[in-house]
Amino acid sequence: MSFYALYPHLIKPCIFVLDPETAHRVTIKLGHLLSKPPLTALFSQKVAARPVEVMGLKFSNPLGLAAGMDKNGDAIDYLGALGFGHLELGTVTPRAQDGNPQPRMFRVKPARGLINRMGFNNKGVDYLVRNLLARRFSGIVGVSIGKNETTPLENALDDYLICLSKVYAHCDYVAVNVSCPNTPGLTALQEAEPMEHLISGIKDERDKLAASTRRYVPLVVKISPDLTAQQLQTLCEICLHHQIDGISCTNTTTHRAIIDGMPHAGEWGGLSGEPLREQSTAVLAAVKAQVGDKIPLIGIGGIDGPIAAREKIVAGAQLLQLYSAFVYQGPQIIQDIVEYL
Ligand SMILES: Cc1cc2nc3c(=O)[nH]c(=O)nc-3n(C[C@H](O)[C@H](O)[C@H](O)COP(=O)(O)O)c2cc1C
Image (cartoon, rainbow, N blue to C red; front, side):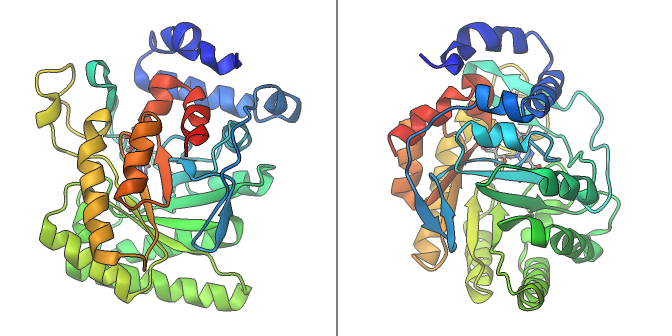
C-alpha cells in the first residue's frame, strides 16, 4: 500500500481542520521542504507510464496539475515527483500582488467543490523564473500568465508580453489565462475584439522569440466555462486563425445552481471540483466540434477519478489537468487515474 493511500484517513482530517487558504499554504511549504533531494525521492510516487506527444511535447502521461496550486513554483520538484505528466505553474503577473482580501477560498464539502476568489495573488514573474531555473524536475512545465489588477484592461497585452518574454526560455509551454473570474474585467478579454488584439500580439511576440532563440514554445489559451455559444465560436475562430497550439477547457465557473443550498454557495468567485464537471465537459465537447483535430485540447474541471478522466478524453481532450480532487483525495488520485488512461 502506498503512503498516500493514508491521505483520506490520516492527512486530510488534519489538513481540513485548517481554513482552506492556511491548508494550501502549509501544503506548499511542505512541498517546498520535500523538494530537497533526499526527501523528494522518499515521498515520490510511481505511476504507470502512459506516454503521449501533444503540441510537439513528450509527456510521460496525459494528467497534469492545473494552474493555481503552485502559483510561484515553490514546490516544483515535489509535485513533479508525485507522478504528474506535467505541471502548470502560475498564474503569474509581471509584478507581485496580494490578490483579494481573505477569506477567499471555501470548501463546498458535500459536493467536493471549492470556491475561490484569490485574484492572482503571486510573487511576480521574476520570483517564478528563479524557481524554474533551480528545478530538477525534468517533466513538462507550463506557465500560466496573466495581468496585474492595477493594469488597465486596454494595456493588458503589455503585461502578458512581459511575462511571456521572461518565462519563455524556462518552460515548455505558456498558457494565456483570460478566464479567471476573480480579476475584475479579465474575462472580458474573451470578447472578439480584445481577444483578437491579445492573441495576435502574444502570437507575434512568441514567433519573434522562437526565431531569436530557435526554440518553439507552444501557446495555450485557457477559457471560461461560462461563455455563450456565440462567444465560444468567436474564440475558437480566433484560436484557429492564429494557429494557437492548445486550448484549455476550462477555468472555474461563476454559476451556482448546482450547489444551491450547500455551505458557502453564496460566496462569489470561481467554483471548481465535481460541480464543474459536466459543464466543463460540455464546453470541451463544443470546442472540439469547432476545432476538430486542428488544435489539441486540455480537459479540466471536476476530474475526480478514472471515469471523469475518460469522459474528458471521449469529449476530445488529449491532455487532462486537475486541482480540486487533489485537495479532496490527495496524491493517490494521480496513480488511480493514470493507471486507467
Ligand atoms: C484555489 C484555486 C486557485 C486557482 N488559481 C488559478 C490560476 O491562478 N490560474 C488558472 O488558470 N486557474 C486557476 N484555478 C483554476 C484551476 O486551474 C482549474 O481550472 C479549476 O479548478 C478546475 O479544475 P478542478 O475542478 O480539477 O479543480 C484555480 C483553482 C483553484 C481551486
